[in-house]
Length: 205
Image 1 (cartoon, rainbow, N blue to C red):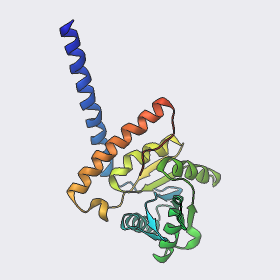
Image 2 (image 1 turned 90 degrees about the vertical axis):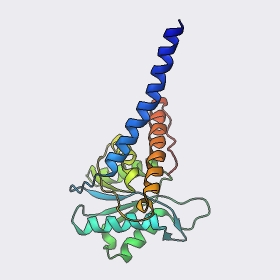
Image 3 (image 1 turned 180 degrees about the vertical axis):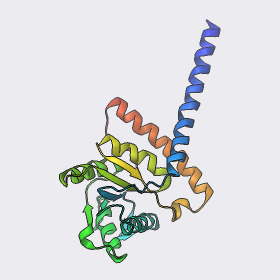
Image 4 (image 1 turned 30 degrees about the horizontal axis):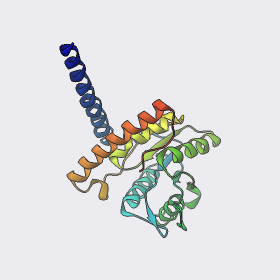
């Protein structure tokens, strides 16, 4: 009995180590992928904005999306994200305004101003892209966010590739990157748990 209990504890410990370790590896691996396959839209996942001005993290994503558009990866850029209580501007609207200042034609930018997390935003994007007769997107976010966002995009019925930004605060230091991998590992575990129990509350971005 004691030996059986010991094996159970050892097995449980190994599972607790192996599963997070595998997910952390996947987060790290997908973060290194820059897939610029042609798609129906480039989707810039939202980040904070203040009074209509994107934060440096958000700016880095938008600048990368503008580069992808110039390269002909997709005919349009979709910015996403609603606003927090008290905000006068949405993340999507702020992103659209910033992209126009970068020289992207306004008619090539669509602001989907709904969703306060990645799941909600991608659900709205999926419906928008389907309404246009498409189904494929290239996701632009921080490197370590790529694995989870791609997983979520697939779950809402999109073909999704990732082309993360390579500059900005999210990738300035090795410490930032390590902490982001740890955080995203927890976020992926939480998201998978939500799928298992049938809830739809996303890990905060």
